[in-house]
Length: 296
Image (cartoon, rainbow, N blue to C red):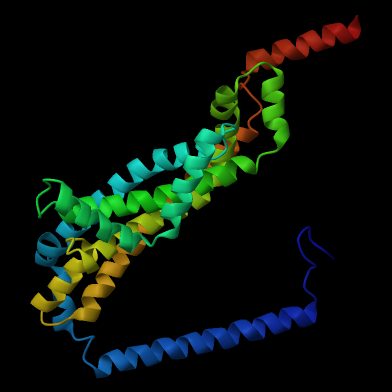
């Protein structure tokens, strides 16, 4: 018995997979137990180290201000990078050389530079040539680096998503008299959004995580740098602080990917829709008309 994608497992394969699953479970439990003993031996599981996170002081003083800066920088970078990446991605598909070549150079240039270098460059740029205050400069530098790098990556995602569509889509649109910009705006982009959505969301998750680079190098007071300050204030509970911060990052990114999965499913269901929904009276009228024609 076979499936569409693979051959169905036989009795031996099923027994072998059950054995592998049992061995993996035992090995994973052993690793977890070893980690637990190591942490307990170093007194990292003592209640005194975890107690601050069951009150409000740690969150209002350290975690919430850092989280607010992280979300602000990430949101600004997303809002700017998404449309900018779409523009450059579409520009790379232009038939005009004077549009396509500069867009290609910009995208390939910034995509090849590490985002940390772009942040440092932005910090020096704002320091030397603008009047941005030293307090706001790290935020500007982090957002600038995130926008330049991620917009170039998103441009490639948009370009690849459009190129995955069959050529017949654009040919049929042009055959009915649509101009090139109308074909792109009304036909290609709406269809490519569903295909691009998983990759776009993955890049948005990268934006959230890359805000931590600003805290490590540019003293940007984001969530991860707040964990360092918090662990020092509460008696060097480094593992506890970073565990809590890691869980917050997991919740944020999981929420983002869950929303994207819901949106992707909604878009796919809408594509499969056959049109307007008929009421009971409409169905009865159609059935009556069909019966009359058949009798005639």
